[in-house]
Amino acid sequence: MPGTLPDGSPFISLSVDTIGELADAFGIGIAQVETTALGEGILPMRYARNMKSLTFEDQVRLLESKVTVIGLGGLGGAVCEGLARIGIGNLTLIDGDRFEDSNLNRQFLCTEKTRLQSKAEMAAKRVMAVNKAVRADAHHVMLDETNAATLIRGSDVAVDCLDNIRTRLIVEGASRREGLPLVSGAVAGTSGQVMTIFPSDKGFQPIYGSAENGPKVGAEASLGCLPQAIMMIASVECSEVIKILLGKKGLLRNKLLFVDLMENTFNIFSFS
Image (cartoon, rainbow, N blue to C red; front, side, top):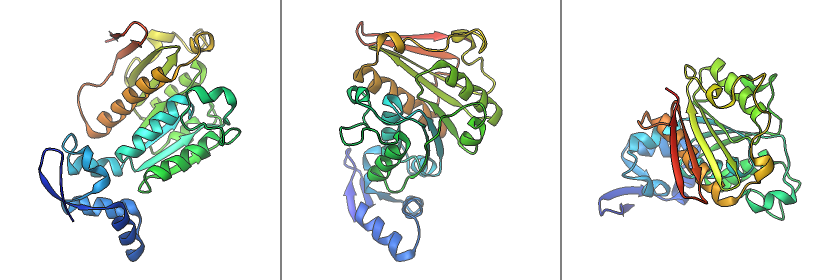
C-alpha cells in the first residue's frame, strides 16, 4: 500500500499484518519476507521511521546481521530493545542469572511478574514481542573461559553489558580470538562509559591493566546503578553496533567515552 515518509517522500509499504500473512502463505520466515520486499523497493512499515537515516540496503544488512549480547540486566535489556526495534535480524542473548527485587529500579526486562525468571529467556520473549523478524537465541548460562568463544562464534559484533571486569576481560579475549569487534559499556551511579574494540586494538589494557593484576569489580559495586545512566549508555552501545554493521565512521575505537549525567559532562579519551 502507498505511504509517505516524514519528509513527504512517497513509498510502497507492507504492514506488520500483511508481512505475517505472506510468511504464512509461502511458508517462509518473516525476515525473509522483509528482506525480499526491501530488495524490491517495498518498505516494511515498521522501518519507515528508520528512513532516511538508513537506506533500504542498510536495513537489509541489519536484518542479515548477527549480534551477541552478553549480560541481560539493565544495559543488556535496553540494548536488546534498541537492536530488536531497529531490525537486527539475529540476536544471541547470554546470561545465567535470574531477576530479583533489586533489579526493578533499572532493568527494563524486570517487572514484578518476571522476578525469579531467567534473564535470557525473558530477553528472548521481549525481542519476539517487539519484532518477530528477529531470531532470538537465549542461553541461560554464565559466560566463562570455557564457553566464551563458542557462545560468540559466528556473530558480527559482540556487546559487553556486564557488571564485572573479570568477565569483561574474558569476553575481550574471546572476541579477539574469534576476530570480532566488541562494544563495551559500563555504568556506575549516574556515570557510564563506552568503548569499541577491534581485535587489533589495545582494548581494555590502558584502562584496567593486565587481566592478572587489574580490578575484579567496577565502581557499580560501591555507587549502585541508576536508570537514566543505563538508558544513555545503552543508546551509545546500540549506536556503535549499528555503525559497525553498516561500515560507518565515527566509532569509539581506541577511545573511551565517559559520561557523567550529574555534572552533564561528556568526555572522550583517546588511547591511540
